[in-house]
Image 1 (cartoon, helix red, strand yellow):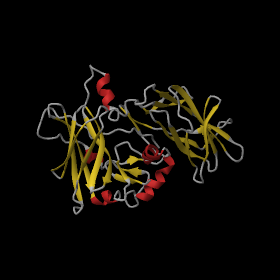
Image 2 (cartoon, one colour):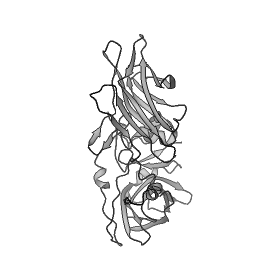
Image 3 (tube, one colour):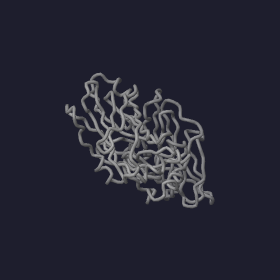
Image 4 (cartoon, helix red, strand yellow):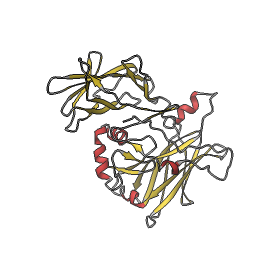
Length: 341
């Protein structure tokens, strides 16, 4: 099991072609699965690190306690998930303060969503379990968490092993969400060049049959979209890089290729994103449900936590999108899921 970064990857910079968008690796990404559920991966420059930790009791024998997911939002809201002995009591604590508790289900799976957000600053969080027979276990790693004073910077989360011969593992970094905080990233550094990027994030139907597509961007001033080469909509990017387009699509077609291009102030195309959209996916949102576009690094836990504030509600997303999610532990970039109310 691994822990994943939430990063949009279909961003490419054009070297100056004003008439055509550069190709992206979106289509290649759709062939690469992303682990979800209680699994996640943290991509680093040197490879992929795992977010799994075992536990030991006082006698030193290995007990079943794993940390599969540790996610902290910029405002300090946090969710942790993993596996343990069935029916075990799971406790998340910092020093002598209990941050949250839960009971593992019959499969040993557990999820803890903190009742209170973590405040700005550094935190050292531990997770322990106690079974019905009185055995207790403490995960052999602690979670080092650093929450910024600002509300738009992704907190740092790392696994800190208790043993000296093991290396820390970075699960989440402020650098992961460069697209989501595009506006601040563009203004925070006058020297470092900003790599333009664009990514659609959600879709929704409005009255009159209009399809509204929202997304994020970085390094541009205007967004245009086309459906199978025909104009769909245009919008200026907001200070934070957000944008929203509205247009109509022909539902008589089985599918269409949506192309999004980002232009700078001179009108030059600096980034693009291709999104294949099937009519069967769009039809799931005709009841008014919002639809989300899966990005590389997304997990159902993350999508559910972002939508509901509860990662465990990923099961609602699976039920709502029956047929589109064959394996809850495997989703793909550019899939489109309806989010039930």
